[in-house]
Length: 265
Length: 87
Image (cartoon, rainbow over all chains, first blue to last red; front, side):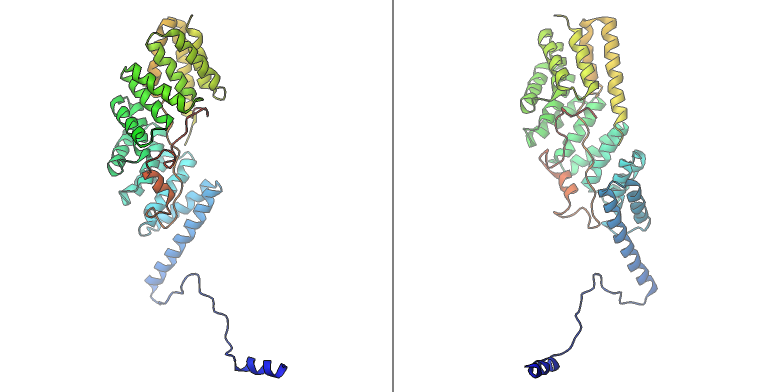
């Protein structure tokens, strides 16, 4: 038996186990080509580390990784993506101006980068740069007219900028895409209220409250709309409900209580 | 993104309302509608979409870009109605 096994072993070809390399070995001696390969490897590694840092909330470390990547000018899609991820890191560090610049750079490289547009609008709203937010939102909608986020974002910007007609149109469009979204009914109601279309505003707010019964802001806005229609008793009740619903939100709760108490029976 | 300025704005608005009510009485309460007009109670801005890998935005795997183009509010990662505190 032992002899037979030895004979089989001797006749079998002896060979080492072969492992496929993770990345192919460079097959060049050209210095520029090797430098390009090294840079590409560095970009990949920094992406990996930068994303890992974001996942664990290490925003400063992540920003350093992506800032280095953009300095390396990687080819697309890595270049625009690195600017995008850099923008996210800066936004989380409250470096909103730099975040906006990074998102703008991403869009400049990739002119149809919807996620970068979406994030740029959010940062612009946070910094009060409504003019830029509106311009980006217009482009966003032109590229993706059926995007819920695009119409929602422009609706908010329009509301804040006092363009109630556009806000009404955008929240109306959003409702055609997603009729059960209570916030869209609320946004549409605010636009209607600004246009002094109080019955329409009331209808939208009541729909929002049917969809989301604990929606404190909708209850508060309903009070405002009822008051505008001189329905003081009902308005008072709405403010009282808003006050109850917003117990975790002192600012809104105080406001609702002030309104409730100001209305004499 | 900082949430503090918005809260400060709302608190300031709250004080302004209180002051105006004290000064002019409840009949002037309708002026609170101006709060809505100023956008202080506008729906909150959507949260940032998440990071993207080095593979880029094109393709089914890229969730943020899909969210940016999605038709539904949930897929688009739009904010839910409160009772969460105002931002």
